[in-house]
Length: 163
Image 1 (tube, helix red, strand yellow):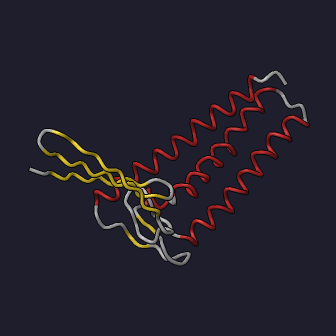
Image 2: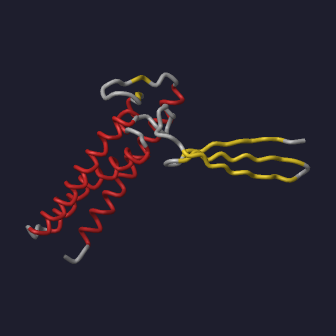
């Protein structure tokens, strides 16, 4: 008897398919990688923006990076009191959330609102299934939490540096 149990996982640029074949008490596992084209379909909890939205988020990520470096430099140049160093949290958290949006092709705002846009800017579609909206909200909350934690860690590290 042969039993197939495929599973698909999505990483940055590959779909990984694992096929397990059960035969006579043995399990054979085959792992196949397929390179993805630029994502052009909505994937719940994984991809909710297309190329034009990604381009917009790349520019916001660059702005966040510049703002983070400028904040860091300004605090050091002005030799501000240590509590001012904690302000690094704001641009750093923004930088991390925006970088994740580009990397995962997933908009936090869209995920929380239950919409997606894979076409032109300004043309959003509604996520119809409640299960998909829940996956999107979960992903968005994970991304926000990561941004907050990295922002806090960065600000505390900067605070305790003997500069």
